[in-house]
Image (cartoon, rainbow over all chains, first blue to last red; front, top):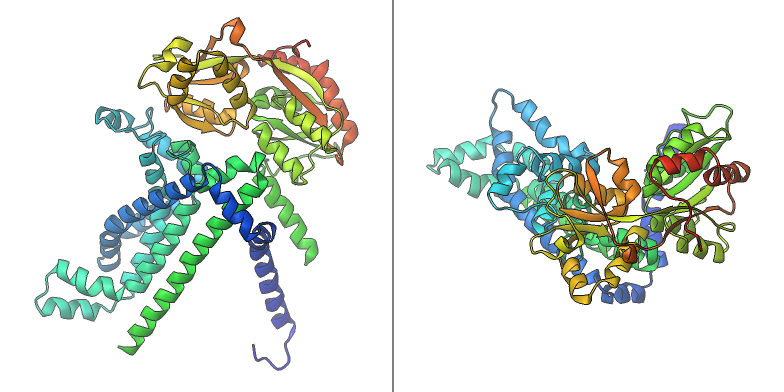
Length: 269
Length: 256
């Protein structure tokens, strides 16, 4: 930033950042330019909007609960143990990160749909997944989990092994060390993963539509409601989009602040 | 720098329409004809496009309502073909397309899996535990479905609607839910059932219930290839397009 006489490379860097910034923010700015605060409030009053919002929050929260409960110990294992095939497992677990949502949807159908590999078992157990709220939670969990796992693993890997050793030496068991030492120390990484996964879950569209369908109050989350409105009520679709941007933005910001203070705390220790 | 952004945006916009980004690889000397068409036209139009001499046709298939909304937002394909006449007429009234033409008809049917179907008639749809997928009320197939249901006794219509598990944005969603066994039945066009190659079978609706399904097509104002667009539409009325439509199970335009 304090280059006295910027060379052509410096200019190129600044130009690249400017283009990236414009390109990435323009659609978001446009959503808010086209939607006044009044439109925003009015659109929430419309039939189905609050229902979609409630469903999105409920399903993403449920998905995140599952992801954290299962993902935290799984990531801890991947981060702290070295075993044969570990790299392969890490890659497999991260694979859904790069899957197109439509592929995720069709994969879920092929695995857990009525005609899927495990479809018979699920049906025999009397569980209905496709076209149900449970199906939405499942789809969100599938697409969002890798975001948390990845960050959590990195978070645990950054924890000083000497702390864990010290904890064990002092007589704390494996479980106690995990809960009392590893999790607080990996806090910022876990929180960052939590936010990314939640944001991804809130925005999920393709897998939800293919696996869980779209029905108001049951499976129609905010992104599906936006898509439905797009054809008849563009303003309404914009307003709902603005709400989703606001929620996701607030999520990202609060996590930045939270993890920032946690890092400061870590440095002061 | 700006010269770089615009193609980038265009590619993204096309990807968003669900169109294949084949601009760079296909073509040659032939002009590119962009056609936004109702999802139910997929089989017939794809076949017609392969034979169409005037241009290399590129299709964007989606719900007619979504495609109309794109045109209202300034997207300019050369041809817009919808599964009703209402949407093209509305776009014409708004000055966004030229005078629409009715080019085909279709029949709404109750579609069920070809094997082990739990539903054998319209009456079976009210039974408890039956799962149904229909079009959302904005997409033509969903609007026609509601027209049919409104002709039934209110109690029966309510019972059927209570069994709806998904309101899909286009016919492809209904077909997919059916072939995957996610639902027991759905309302589709006869041509959609035909396109599944025997995976689904059609249960015809009684004569009095059948809605008049008419497909409208129009040249979009500001089309890059208006001449090819007109030739494409002419072929739908009489020529390779009409044959492809007939082969796919479409009917002649319903008489007024």
